[in-house]
Length: 169
Image 1 (cartoon, rainbow, N blue to C red):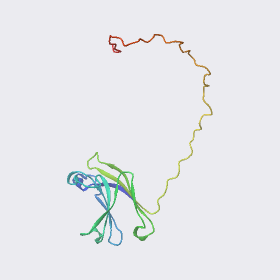
Image 2 (cartoon, one colour; image 1 turned 180 degrees about the vertical axis):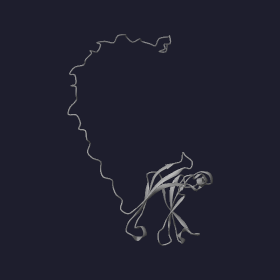
Image 3 (cartoon, helix red, strand yellow; image 1 turned 60 degrees about the vertical axis):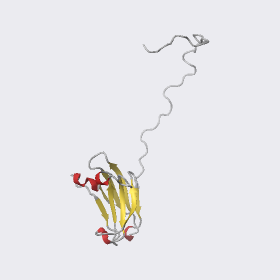
Image 4 (cartoon, rainbow, N blue to C red; image 1 turned 30 degrees about the vertical axis):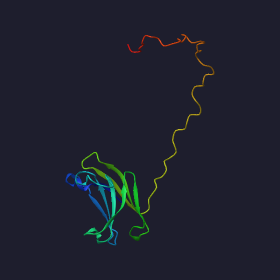
């Protein structure tokens, strides 16, 4: 598996941490796959599709070393993943997971994980350690503690008063 940070090509010049711009996934047959962060800023600000998402492309041939027709195969937002089944005819899957995107920093980045082979499911959490209480600690009262008034304390007027009232001091 591989886990790391991708930045967009438009912020290449501010890549002080030497993060990856694009990942090439070698297919073994020339029709390779490429994973990148389509950061919508600068020269890339007029994107029509997949702004600030991880994009996954597949080239038709040529190992990505020269001109080749490519097809957009996936666009991933945070928390999403894409599976390439039977990767390199192994019978196993290659999963590209988009963990997080942060565009509030420069350079903006995408945190990606690529996993080959069986996907493990985490073990369930252990049982809770504290038991619930058996019963309430205080018994409810059987009667109300204060008696309500028998009648209203002031009789309503038949019409509104002429003088304006205010609750403010």
